[in-house]
Every structure is written in structure tokens, then in C-alpha cells.
Image 1 (tube, rainbow, N blue to C red):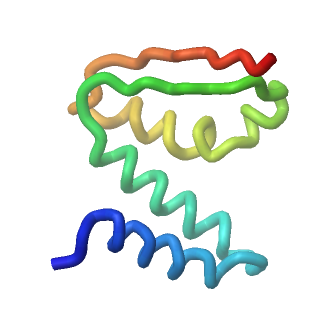
Image 2: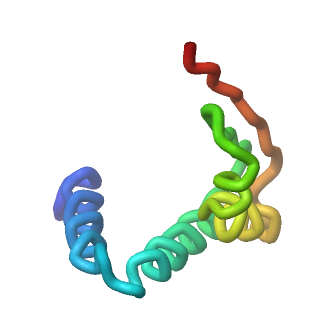
Length: 85
């Protein structure tokens, strides 16, 4: 069986073949949704500075966060702000 990192690289390389196509964002949305649905326990968001517009248009707000809210095994959310000097 492949190492987890090798499987991740293989998946990433397969997804990157969609780059530049109209399906690229859809593929990432599907993967992000499935990843969120399989999450459990405490979820920690580490976020650097971002504009409100960029955050609202992000995969986090549009796909991952709503999926996590619907995932019964997620028990808590925490946020760790990152300040870049």
C-alpha cells in the first residue's frame, strides 16, 4: 500500500490536470466537502489576514464551513488568528 503522502501527491497531481478548466474549482469543492464530512472533534481554523470579500468568496466559507456545521462528529470550532508583520 502507498504511503499516505504518496497517495496525497497522486491525488493532487490528478486534480492539477483540471487546472485552467471550468471544472477545476468544482473538483476542489467536492474534495473539500468530502474532507469536511469526514472530520471529527475540534476544528481549528488558522487564518491570516484576508479581505472580507476574499473570505466570503473562499472555499472555506462556501463549502467547508457549511459541511462542518452539518457534521455530527465535529464537536467544537476554534480560530487562531495569524498576524504577519
